[in-house]
Image (cartoon, rainbow, N blue to C red; front, side, top):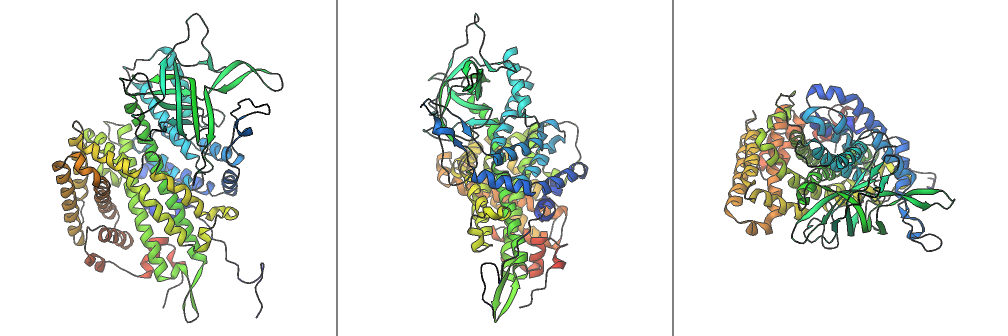
Length: 640
């Protein structure tokens, strides 16, 4: 018997992460459920190629670089002589990943393509694949997307009261935000959070004063080459969290008068200063637009992302919409950024499951008396991964349905588009906006909260190696993914904030009834799908649970419900997911999806344990759930 050494003896075979667009059975199924065949045919090849590219060695190397060479302020914010000098430095990896996203149009595709109401579904299917490899560059892209949507809304409003100059500035920003050229594409910040609070912006201490430049003088420029003028508003204050500190512009909130609510502004991050002199004597240049980076935040996760505290002094900007209407304006962005946050969370879960699946194919475990089994044939491990896959699939259904409703809201049409199986849940036009109002908060609070323990379970599935920060094997670095995923339940509104917002929407005096009607319509439509047998009990319990929620929401005041807002919102989410499972199973029935659906119904109380007796409960079926029916033939039989 020879002893092992550092280079001899057993050394674990490296797991291989496959293209998730083909390897992720739930993603494939939910995409086919959501997209019409004609749309899927148009995008299939390009998305498949993207699935390969995001796992390329170049991308993996950039991820490692972005994590190792984290953002910093050159000279800690001062030059050699002590003068303030706010030079933010980001690494090659961050820049490479961001440019890759620009070229692939992770934001632009929603604005330069026309898949009708399916635009967002196409866009976020691509983002889903990119999330696990983007090293948080999709965070500024989310705010870029939200800013583009907000400016698009104002630019296309017929009664929008904008001067020709302001319209030109907005159009220029929109063109940059929706470009695919890395030399031209802008990202955007979204500055709401102050020391007084994050989602609660009522106590905002940033102040904006209308202070236009004299007509007798030439208006200073934001960009000398593009001749874009600075805005007439002077904005001063302190922003406590600003992700995307390296962005080109920002949307921010400020108060214009004590008697008015907050207002929304757009401002460039930099401005032209003709009096600047470079260290080599060149005159003229660019400087921050009245912004001082006080310090960069030190965070548990998302460490590649530059997040800072910013002091604003005479930052010049443009008012968006009307004074005091900032909450309404920023809600357009929040609808987009919350969806991005949820897709990032589900994308992290998808990549973590991919890592766990690949590890199970190469790792063995002892089962007693000297016998060993590959984890991919171990009954308990397969049941664990199958249950995680069921949870993943359940969350995917809610996310993709929300994306579908977002697409319907953004692109209403009178001409019918090609249907997808999910189109049976397309509500009447007057209920689209109320349903989105509920789903926007509900899906983000439920999904992002449940993602964290799920990804931890994927990390646990790798044993000790899952707990390591595997920068030397970045493609299986699930610990990095776990750290980054934890923020999903915090930013863009914590779980409690969004659960409260969901209840607030349904209890709202003007839109509450429509919100309830929209959810009710969706539930009733879902239970009408042609499924019988064990599903009859499920349908009855879905209706019973929804009627209990609806009755409570109608009977109790908002203040009475508030302590239970999280429980009420989560149960509402589970009712909707149960309905979506019915649609999924009915659209393409089979043993794997029926077993997954039955397990979900039992776990969430929509069916008794007897429902599981009517579906197969074997290792082979769990393997099919995890790896797909086509791959199970290559796995060895488990015989204990």
